[in-house]
Length: 194
Figure 1 (cartoon, rainbow, N blue to C red):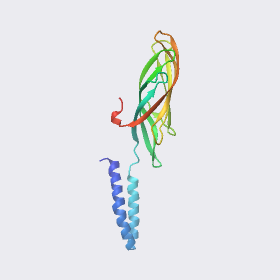
Figure 2 (cartoon, rainbow, N blue to C red; figure 1 turned 90 degrees about the horizontal axis):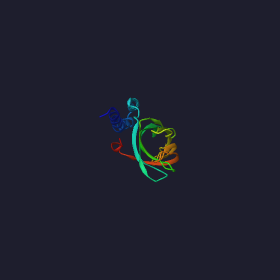
Figure 3 (cartoon, rainbow, N blue to C red; figure 1 turned 60 degrees about the vertical axis):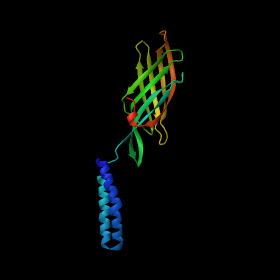
Figure 4 (cartoon, rainbow, N blue to C red; figure 1 turned 180 degrees about the vertical axis):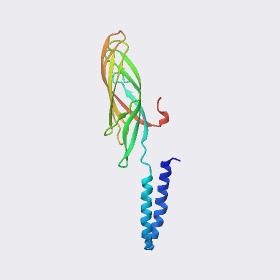
């Protein structure tokens, strides 16, 4: 049993057993008020010994859709949250795993399989992350920006804005400008893609 679980069990036992006993004694005798004061101080002391809230991690997986062809590819990440004023608030997005289906309107297509181990801070439930890819031919450079929101209720969603150039099958550079939308749902962390 972890320290946090043990502390929570002790606090619950004290609340249910000791405080009820003290309340019954305090109502009957003048000495009871002293006992009640000692019990309240003891409960407060146990509360001080309880460890602070530990960050919670959640895994999400879903799809990113190409606006050119409608293809859906995988998109997944994890969110680290912490308690603030009694609520879980997302603090960081990490372990991004996604396939970026870049389809240039004039031709040229590539699926970029990305494993990004960066920790992206979340501010006011929103996050933004930029990345790039340099191809093997001169002039092949793709830049993208991932933006998203982790709502209090519902599923996280966002977009990926891609810009740059990529060569088509004939070796002609094609300009790529597109915005792809992504949506994810919460999953069991054991199913998170590696």
